[in-house]
Amino acid sequence: MKGLLLNTFLGLAFGRFGGVWMLCALVPVVAAELLYGYYVHQLGFSAGLRRGAALLVCGELAFLLGMLMRPMPGET
Image (cartoon, rainbow, N blue to C red; front, side, top):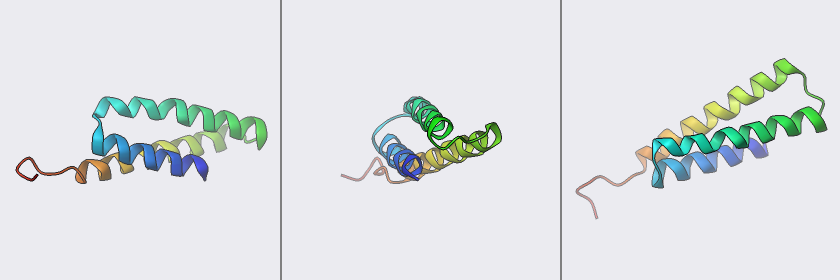
């Protein structure tokens, strides 16, 4: 759950203030969360794939939401 929240907040921040290439920063966060699940919770390979996919999709959707929150060019 912490990984989903972290990816959501990072995605929102990157979408609002950064560019598309900032999404590459989500990959190490997902990798760290998967390693944590593997060593602490003894998750299997398929559970890790599902969890990683969910984390990446959550971060990407939050990024798109952050892009929508950008001000329009004519606004101040």
